[in-house]
Amino acid sequence: MKKVVIVGAGLAGSYLAAHLPADCAVTLVTKKTRGDSNSMLAQGGIAVAVATGDSAAQHADDTLKAGKYHNNAAAVSQLVTTGPVLVKELLAQGMPFDKTSNGELAFGLEGAHSCHRILHAQGDQTGYALTQFVQGMIQNVEWKENTTVVDLLIANGECRGVMLRNAQGQLRPEYADFTVLATGGLGHLYPLTTNDATITGDGIALAQRNGVKLADMAYVQFHPTLLTKNGKCYGLITEAIRGAGAILVDENGTHIMQDFPQKDLAPRDVVTRQLKAWQQKGHQLFLDISAIKDFRKKFPGVSRNLDKHRINFEETALIPIKPGAHFCMGGIKTDLNAQTSLKRLFAIGEVACNGVHGANRLASNSLLDCLVSAHKAAATISTSAMKTDQTVAVKTQPAEPKIIPHLPEQTQLLEMAWKSIGVVRTKETLKEFLNWLARFNYQDLRPEQLSAQELSIANLCVCAELIANSALAQPRSLGANYIEGE
Image 1 (cartoon, rainbow, N blue to C red):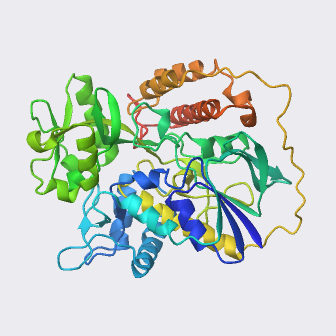
Image 2 (cartoon, rainbow, N blue to C red):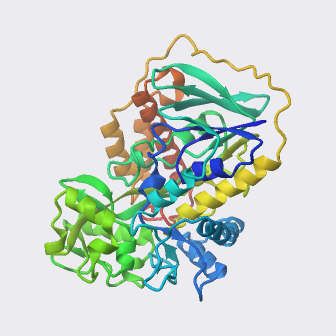
Image 3 (cartoon, rainbow, N blue to C red):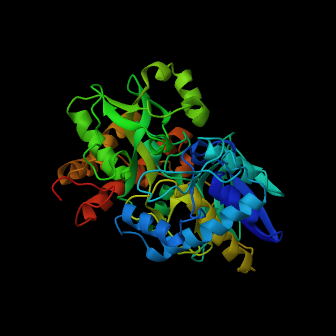
């Protein structure tokens, strides 16, 4: 049987596990549990052109516009044409997307979309509902929870599996004919983020250390509306709320996005930069929900979170927000079949970059991309031959002597990243940030010799360096890579 190792239990990894053929022996590795992923936190929905009056061409046009035409057009075409087929399959299998009172699919509107095409499930809990549904389809898969991948196993120019470390700290190789990274992005490089706590750039750093090609690392998307209280982030406030009529205001009730063509539903990079500028003038930021009827019924997950953190939104009709890190458009470079530059290594979901998102991801395209990239990986693996030579000569013990880690404090790293590679960048601060990173030895360390915390910090440092260098290499500001004066 073909041996397949999937690293990451979010929607992309789970969908792949559920759709590999019976001749595959599948191991699904996850850093914590199968419930810990960005997919489980996704509120906004899944964008798909299946409504009457909508089309794949319109969806592609919106995706390209949001991505500032930096997108790979072939990847966009694949997303908007394959995506509807996969969503219809899920519907036929019983996936309970929300419906209107007359039993038709309910389509929502989000930023930079030209029409209502966002499907939701359980209101604002689409990612949770969809990922749980897909995980319920998985059969005959060996789960390895609370397990960290510390390195790739490479022999003769091919990936032959991964080196694992279990919760007890024990190292062991997991050999495979095909290895798939579905580890998510790098959101915890920043102090305010919508990302799950497990998202520390692990897959990207793993690829970089092993010479696997990366792409578009300058483009990090910052979401305009994160629930904030006393300077801390308590989760995402879905863009669907603005699609339902909410507007962004300051403490005086001034409509912040009033003068922009698409107002509160402008692309995320545009909205976030405006909010950042408003903050720098000393203003507080709020989402005014007074125009939304039955808010609690329409957005039950957000409402529970607001109640939990004692936000009196029903009386004030205001939700305190700030921008924060959300999504990485760049990542491990792949072709349209999710194959990386290293043979037998695939990447899917947010960790991968086939160019579909361009310089700024269109809202609610991420869950769709998880399905499409996983589908393509499954099809490729199912038709590829297993490795006939099962002998793999790899070093499985830590190198000696051990290099003593010299790493920044995580809080300091996050603050520096927000200042230097955040919403607005300058060439000067990018260079200063790289000089600061050069003080530390994260590039020289052996991952298997590091504690879990040290490895997370080292991985984030690797990602930070990649973002800064990529941002400096760009000839001009574009989308999420906004450099003042360029």
